[in-house]
Length: 391
Image (cartoon, rainbow, N blue to C red; front, side, top):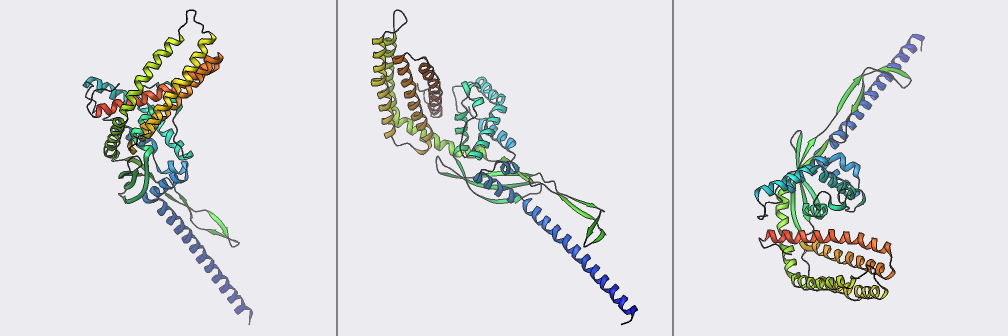
């Protein structure tokens, strides 16, 4: 082979290798571009966002939950639905009083919504419902936050499936099938999502090295955000409340009726015991003697506490409708806390122990909060049935 032919073949081989490298480079860019497009198109759908919401709740993934739920907007809109007609059924309120209460709920809206967000975040992270203590101590805001949460149904709502996700452009809708655990009532929540996508394609004419050669080719860079679709509202939340709340209220009414005789009978007993207890504590000098302390200790231990236990035992025998479980649990909790307060008070009397007295006082405050919650539920039941207010 002459020198000319050999050089010709070498140039042809180099040209072929160069074309192959160009083809490989193009194929690589196309492949990467397709992979990015496939990923972004798949993750930039409302269906993907809805599935991620459910998954984040199940896995306790708070970060992912916030990526796909605009929780501040959702909670604020839900709060308006929850409190908008809260006093509608209370015929004892005048128009001006009702307006005053409604304005009050608007005034405390930021604190209530902030508290609700904290409760939801804690539930997702830990799996447990807990209350934000900073807005509960002393009921500073004039309302019972725990009772408000119970009325919201959030703690008794379970997601079962997501379907009918429809992309409408910058907005989307989805059906979230749920079940209310208190009543076993199925319901379909209608939610709205908004598109917060920020997808961009940038091209640059940078030089880069590949296969030992320097190439000039428009470099591609993609900027995309996983937070594309977010839930911004539960559109028929008020309808959900209107469907389930009457069922719960009926169960509460039935439970109150079933336990009325027990409660009324023991209320009379407790009143008599309270009168006796007050008399037993009286002194001429303000200082109780040893025999008086012993008498009070025995009265608490052998009369007051056993009566509380007997009352709770009778209440426990009553079959509790599922919708009234919250009220029944509050009564049981109140009984337990009351007994603990009496035990510490008895210890304080018997041993003249100031720390025991302080502990009893602290627990007694918890008891008062629980009893106030119970009384409010009973009062709401009376209002709903248009009956005279129960004591």
